[in-house]
Length: 141
Image 1 (cartoon, rainbow, N blue to C red):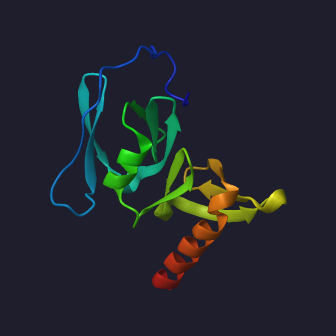
Image 2 (cartoon, rainbow, N blue to C red):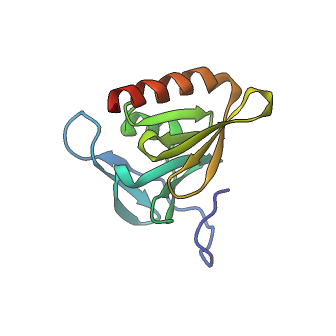
Image 3 (cartoon, rainbow, N blue to C red):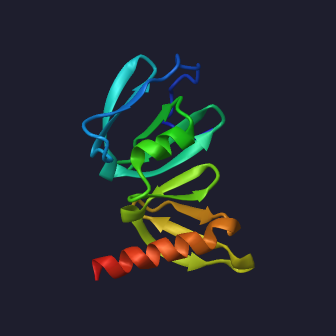
């Protein structure tokens, strides 16, 4: 389960609709259904997404965590591979929100995100993550 705001009941919301506005290119705003509400969310403000059983938790820069019933694979398609990186079977991170990368024992990587959280990259995704981060750094330089 994901860390959500205290005091919320954890009853299962109804099935979720997930739509991206605009054209076929990855949109800057997505609409996510959480409970009975459609919430507009700015994609650049998403720090990371984690799978939690039948839900995904979308962690935003401002600390808000939105829980919605969308498969992480479907959400990954909507967010696009240009900005979001799959670092684990159940986790996507926003490339623009990675503050630092550190090697851990056993060949693992730890990412520190812009809002201060840390996350560990799965061993089988280490090479792909390093390649993507270094190619993004070269493009910025």
